[in-house]
Image (cartoon, rainbow, N blue to C red):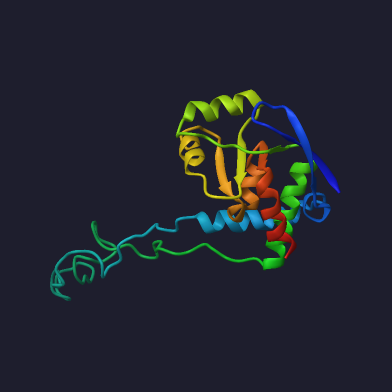
Length: 207
């Protein structure tokens, strides 16, 4: 079993906790992580680019001039794509870029992301992180005191005081254990786990 020190918010070691080797200490394959991260980022693309086609442009449907006898090219109504202000041909339309990879691959990638943080000594375990009031300065002081850079803090239960206190701090993100994902784990410098969240993560990934 992998063992990690448990600290309090003052950075003092108070105990140790065992981590499941099957979740926090497996072989890491970059190709699997890349596949899942690419899927996540594709799902976040807005895909809202859109143009107005001939039928969407406002204008008269009247033929501009007669078909023959003018010496000019044949012309329909003013909404033709060749005219200024007309519709656009073959332009983009709203679409979804999202796709899915198999559930087993997503679960494996999450284990690999956690393992990469453990193997890189980038996991910090805190016994608890409770605030009496919403106070951004207090969260900043705790993070600075622990010397944690760009942390992802994982909590087991809803904690509005902590979430609201940290939301204005740049490069600080807080997630519940069920929202933990590969991209956010790899994107942070330190993975901060509350001791209570470890059992929730292991329960989610061992099932």
